Length: 406
Image 1 (cartoon, rainbow, N blue to C red):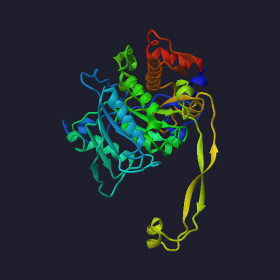
Image 2: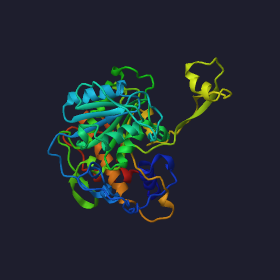
Image 3: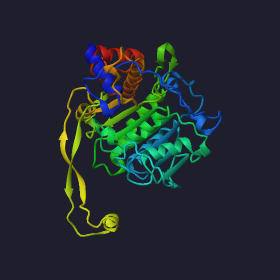
Image 4: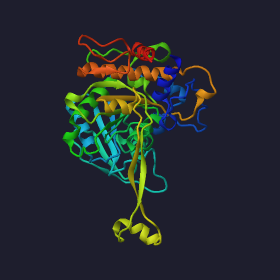
């Protein structure tokens, strides 16, 4: 039981670069605060946090409309982002700002731009407070939104950052390369809760292809913010006051993947761990005449050999309870991801209470979203339809059931 529990917690919370079923989990030691000082009341002070604050600082319940920051890696004109904003606007529960790359920036991971200027152009996007297209990476877009006067003159304090909806899944080791996840992770690095949304359909090029996943995304977002009808609050860390999943998930990412077979084939919501599936490259040397696409190579290195990266062999990981397994079996996969990339389980004692809080918050989102949509829930005590007539017990109990099952 304990080994299974450790595996669940590690896969759910340890960052993607080191996820392994053999890892153990220990208490995360707080780090020393940064040597720099930040003046109170400044723009940077607004988002200045310490590791301890990420763990336990619970903001009071909102007495205003939630403020969402939307971004992606497919570009501001991508149909997934556009349909997501449309559905959020239709639901009319939050104020929305958009700051996203000006064009396709897939597989940019967490790259940021240094050494050159970045332009930010306003974009027409119905239902938003403001929308800007950034000549940079997905992580650049989030950085600018949080730490510049670009949006709302720098005065917007976002309650949740949402990245997507991506064209194609971000399961398994894809989270390492993903610009969608990288943008969400950048928000988590700044102590905000974030959600990465992806649709397991690389052929989804029209807004209508994203309608159902966008509607389910709205449910996930509202569940994270504690806005679904009848949704109970969840316990704060260390026995703190009741709060929302968003507050507990500060400094973490919910990686949500929607299955390609939607509609009647949709099973429900499944709390999952990150799997180890990935696609290997198959580089092919380009043998063709020079052209504009080779201009930089032709100009600077005329004797270069030119290669293109194509998809090659697929490393499958169909372990039950993993994100890839869930999506292939018709589940909406919900995987909590953390920021640490070390292996403290090898050298330290005990389980990290922070991990338990993250899993509990993710469990509450899964249960609330499933209840609201009338779909089934998986990855907790057992696969079961969520009955009408009220939510299940609070998130801590749900997480405990999930741990007991494993």
